[in-house]
Amino acid sequence: MTAQVTEFRRTALAAQVERLLQATPAADIHTHLYDPALGGLLLWGIDELLIYHYMVAEGFRYLDIPYDEFWGMPKLDQADLLWQHLFLEHSPISEACRGVLTTLHRLGLDVKPRDLGAIRQWFAERHVESHVTRCMELAHVDTIYMTNSPFDDVERPVWLRGVDRDERFQAALRIDPLLVDWPNAALRLVEWGYDVGEGFSDHTLSEVRRFLADWTRRLAARYLMVSLPPDFVCPAATDCAQLVERAVLPHCREFGLPFALMLGVRRSVNPQLRLAGDGVGRSDLSALSHLCAAFPENKFLVTVLARENQHELCVLARKFRNLHIFGCWWFTNVPYLIDEITRLRLELLGTSFTAQHSDARVLDQLIYKWDHTRRLLASVLTDKYMDLSATGWEPSAAEIQRDVRALLGGAFDEFCRRRT
Ligand code: HDL
Ligand code: ZN
Image (cartoon, rainbow, N blue to C red; front, side, top):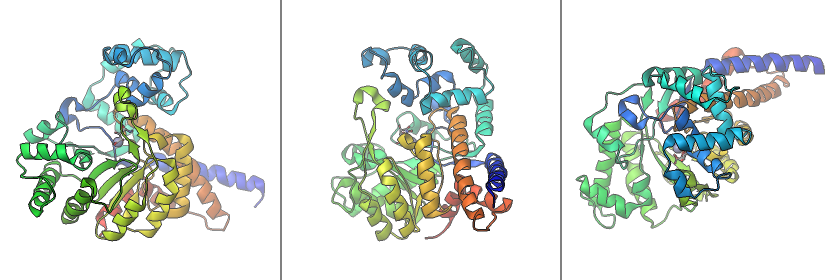
């Protein structure tokens, strides 16, 4: 094939892949968004976008005020300060800053005037219910998985009162305190009527499982989830490893639910940054390898925070069909690494993984996180289909549609349905 024909073929293929990606709705399988029925928990609008903890971390690189002075400010003043430093005094070329502008642009706002007041006025005229639908339409997301924690003192009572659910929002039962801070979590379980005690007697473990069962039913949770530090080891005599193997995994088998492990977060490396203060560490994935091998009837959804762990995670997914990997999480959710990680996964796993989750904390972020991901996915997939084309294998539109659907949530649904 001449270079000119190849170039023509690539252009046509790229347009086809991009069109199919834009036309295919995504399931966003991990976010920190909430069904509007959960009240004020759902964050949205320009000021929440500007004070998102990614922005705070970047803003403090320019701010020379004491941390507590910033935290003592009203939200609008925090947002003004971050706008001034991250957008006006320095070009907003970081992924988090660019994302704010992508979102505003896709919502139809003109950012050229750099008029924060006018932007605020536009948002002041929105209503949350219609804005949820608008953001999901622009992001082309049809299902949002929440992060729901019984240990969250604001969220728990809302669920206990009962919630009239929006079916676009699915629940995930988040259990970090149970596993990373068992002594204090145990006190709370006792307070909530679960008869747990010191050590892991059969009675305590059955009470932990009753707690998990109650909340799985209350939320209609689609999976259980925990984020664990780089030093998570298993098997081990630790509270975490014991609870995972003897309570959480039996519970997940009983309810036929995956267990999602998000590995590699070093919590509070700079506590003064609060939610923005977490860091990253390379995990020992032998713990994951052990869990996949020792519990073949459990299903593990996994994403890792360290770039250094991505290749080993792909190799593990080749070894264990009960392991499904998902998303470019947090510090890897930047174009350079999304491109690298997605190519690695396609080349090692085909389409048997979930390409992305947004991790959005602010509703409007759905728009930019999925816009940027679809652009990158289009480029990577086009390259891969061009490689196929060079062998004489021409992927049909139906086959490309099937692959795109798999990567945007279809493979996840299949993994959740399939008995391992
Ligand atoms: O633990 C998690 O789910 C992480 O995603 C944290 O919430 C983190 O603060 C975050 O929002 N990352 O994007
Ligand atoms: Zn998250």
